[in-house]
Image (cartoon, rainbow, N blue to C red; front, side, top):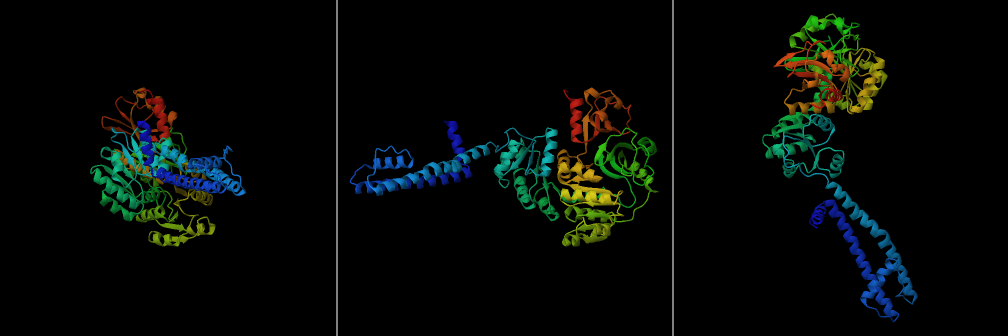
Length: 568
């Protein structure tokens, strides 16, 4: 009884359930009025026929006729009485046999089931929860971020105000709690005071209110906020956010760093300890047509080659790979070594033509501004004259129109451009343009943004050399903050993994380990007693109590754990 009463009280507190229950109650009240009215008419007509019956008999007759039972023990003798019986019968068919079941199901039974489902979603985290991460929206960045947290066994909870979305997350096994984001009670139930971090990723205006609420409840918690308009950065910082992430601006800057322009050089894309991870494009250099071993980069400059980009895939190095104009090496070394390696580009051909950017929105505008600051000429195409006008100050020239127009592309310099940067927010359009630009210029480097992970493979097949998504950049930024690390963007899905040398690999050399062959990961460094070694070979022994630094994607890391770490 206690359980039933508590459940009933819970359902009655549900606003949707209460609203539908009121509708059903009004219908039942109207039905009762109709029954009483027919009972009165029954007495009136019976009196006209000279028959006398009690009020209970009148109610009894009305209900038996309306429900179509019609026992026949009480009947009218006159035509008007029989006509009245027909009216009562038809009214009963519609009100009791058709409308009542429908109203009951629509306004009571279904809402009861929906309320029961919604009540499955927790309203609070478990009482002993601490050092967890709270996420204010399950958007594309949050989805990618949650996958990373799941891999690392870091507890997290998504706060969702929409009961339907919350229920969907719940059935999809996403840790979720239901609550309004602008109420202190929601964050109290989420145990925000013992949380490790809160990721505030609603729109700029709502974010500000959420930040103020959280900061009042937990003065020392780390708050990471997403921002869409740069004008809102200061507002969110002043409201109490520790880190404000203008991800679309960063995405444009990251894509700009991946283009080929002017004299080619090595491009640092990440850092481990005091070592830099860099990309080394070999287009138009003396390295083309040589194998990795024949380049002798380690002997001449002291850098280690840890991978090679092949249309979006980072492949481990065996030493026998032959380099082409499309090859981009991934190397690791200190600043001095990277500076010295750039001498191989001094005699390479110089392309003085502007980089072509297609799409002048926030991402394209940020890319144009970044290249402008680097002294790189930019031509830009966009259909929106206002956007073209806005970014014109960063461009050599702007072209208003459709990028799929051959004459416009030709006029904008597609045939001579060293690189094309695709920054439209439509994946299908970027794929189309990547294929088109590749056919028009076989040697151009194509850099593109992407939204959906499922399109990454397709756009690489279409001709793109480098692809980066908004979700990947955002999730990597938030994850780096949660770990207290510097943001490192190596490529779409490519990450650094630092793990203790597994027992199964201790005292084996790299050649015997088969890490690259079995998992696809590249071993880029070993750290033992605070000393980092990057000059590795097949004979390098994996010592006990050391850390191994790996480069690859999450699928490769999962495979590594299954093969080498399982059971430890």
